[in-house]
Length: 230
Image: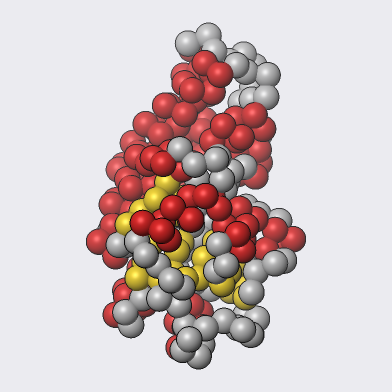
């Protein structure tokens, strides 16, 4: 864990979902393969299912950009159908399987809340997915609010976090995430940025501009406790 140089105690922490709180691949990959089986059956896709590395590499992006990466030659109709199917299938897998939080996530969030930290989610995913995951995993009540690009139709995570800060009158916060979009959202709104280096989806250079890198989620407690008050 890097030293938290320059970080002051925040009023709030804003968390990405995939690759930060939640081991996304535990529901994403089964749903991804089922989705392409259905697209082929509906005549909307031909050939093999694109490599898993494409969908995993796109995590953190807006869905419209993910499909441009995964199925670049498909039209908007196919992309829209893929959105519908992936959400539906992920929620089915979520309810029937054993999706995993990263170690110590729930306990750490509870400890932060007990310290008076306001907790939020900001994700580039769809509303039903973001809220469905947190509800199924027992996190929903820990968050003051959950913001998704799907609900607010924001073009970037910078704008999504800006909306969150304004709506909830948050004066200081740390943005916690694993992708460059999280770093940009924090930097673009003048927030401290904590990079989650334990996820395997993003390249290391994506987090180069974070204030601190953590190897375990529970390191947030020490960072908060050691940070000076503003």
